Amino acid sequence: MSSEGRRPSVEQVAQSMLFLYGAHDDDHDHAHGDSGPGAGTWAKAPSFADDPQRAAAIAEASRRDRERYLNEGLTEVACRFCHTTVEVKKYDTGYTAVQWNSRATDQCAYFAELRAEGGDPSRAPACPRLHDSINHAVAEGVLETRSEE
Image (tube, rainbow, N blue to C red):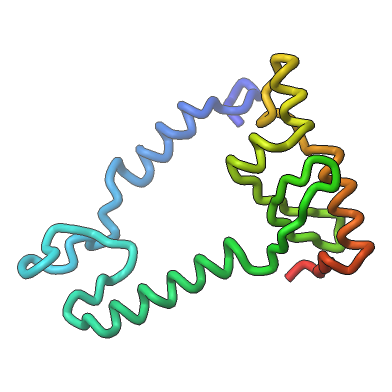
């Protein structure tokens, strides 16, 4: 706190940090050497340009990780009212992940009603009819409820 008993402003804190630590991050060598390929550049991870086999293996592993993260555990669920289809992942903690696509958004009867009234479907928290369909899919055993990982 300042001498007046008030908290310092963000600008005052930033200025004191610059005074204490300097304006540049000189603690790291971002150049990775002075010559050769990539000299003067910085990368978050090595490119393995000198080992194409390893680079290909890492690229494939990254693709699989991305696919698993984005799509694993998703199950197609059709709305019992308008028959639009979305992908859903249901957790036991009350969290439900719903992956909408453009076709589903256009086909959803609830969102069509919102658009007709001048509303924006992207501002709606969820489609209540689809919510009922998801609960029905869980009750039928079509959609598995997962525990959080």
